[in-house]
Length: 352
Ligand code: ADP
Ligand code: MG
Image 1 (cartoon, rainbow, N blue to C red):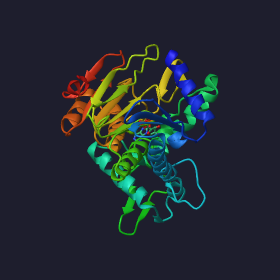
Image 2 (image 1 turned 135 degrees about the vertical axis):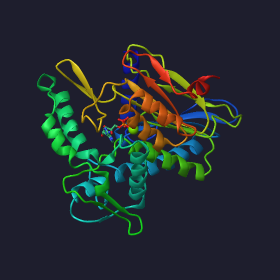
Image 3 (image 1 turned 45 degrees about the vertical axis):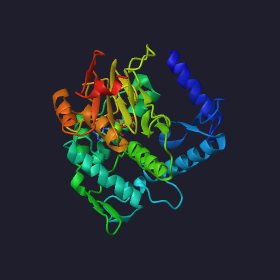
């Protein structure tokens, strides 16, 4: 509860500041610690933390990062159209109507998402939009009117699942076009776009010479470098699905790392006392209750985001196998009873 209030007050503060950055710093000699917060990007709270010589220096770094994230946010939006912008929503609206010329950043995201599909044997599938759209509608209705909350019929989901073929997403990197072959299919990039955008924005900041920065877009965390010039590691807390405690599940101590968690507590609704979260198993077309949360630690934030969603749809043994097969990648599963399962190298990330 305490945390909820804290979160709420942080959100309120951010709201009051609208899109302007809130920058705070401590009075010390040498580089000082600063933090900035803003809302609106990827429908969540963005927090940036770092050390700088002056408030102006930090504010400039944050502004450039924010501008980059804003571009990705608009291009990858599936719900909102923007004047004179071809985004993922446009692609969905043009399904079955031939190729659409798009920004290179969209091509890159879609190619990355196809790789993630192959890597996870389809457990994270951005072409699942026809199915996730149904769940999205039933969830919104159920949240608005809990008494009337209901589940979609299996026949409806199965019909939609006929229009989720990744092979019907055609990408032509040379012509810079994207085509949805199936007029009834649609893209839902919600499982990958945020992490991918954070990764690209972080790399751009690195190229501008930023040496140390911690970026969190709605808990999708990406660290640039170490915490400071002394090489001390960043400390990233993994949120506990249990709202009654303030304790983190674990604290990752590392440099140049991304930590991303998918959890049942993020978006869900309740039907007849049973909770239904927002990650859909492509095999059963339902949200499964394998875990309360899955966290991924790996350098690339796009990969971390894709894997945290995919692992939700994999049994523990298969998930462990996948993580083991990947370099510099660790996972933490929070089981339905609250117990924790770590991948082999996870403990090394949390010890001092
Ligand atoms: P969040 O971004 O909310 O932290 P995730 O990264 O786990 O959560 O992504 C969940 C979102 O991805 C869902 O809200 C939905 O839009 C979409 N989604 C749900 N199931 C799948 C799936 N199996 N494959 C791809 N996308 C999915
Ligand atoms: Mg994800």
